Length: 274
Image: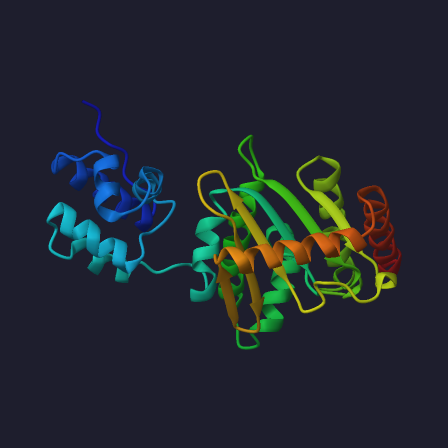
């Protein structure tokens, strides 16, 4: 019998241990899900390391498998590469079938070039080292890989014109950033729309919004401010966020005109370099 592959991350190690303990207990994923009170698909996500159980679910897993608090205690030791308020979002976007993002002042992280990300992190962290910046940039770049491959989620990106005009990192960085967004849109990897300044007031003036839809779970919404983020799964609140996104989208330029504006702005930055 071939030796099982070693899990690549702590989350995968957690999931693999859960799978082995479940099998040793003579349980199927369906049987365990009945006790934990969740779907078999969610148990599958736990075992694959794509998601972590919440503390209550971990306690129920321990009770079901007779593991004496093992999975609950281990859960406390798993540290995310992301800020606490964003860790759950980073997990969920790996399972999303559709992602709709709105950038009010900054290009959303999933679309950022290394140069743009570095400039943002440098501004947010005045007391930084080069290694710390490099690590943050690598983590952000890794997130963007969800748009690669045949199972990539459907992507919608709505940008306020302020994202195009705010000179993050200088003209060279901005030109590279805007050309990247345009290339992704032209390649069909995302649907791009820009809210021009001329649109005036719109439904998303309050700030960024991130919407995710899933094949086997209800949709969620995420909003973020300075050093804080809020993940919403209440159906009524999520519907209100979806409506706000749709209203703002109705005020935006069509994709063809949005692409033209993004390309033209990138050219302006290129001229500025000369």
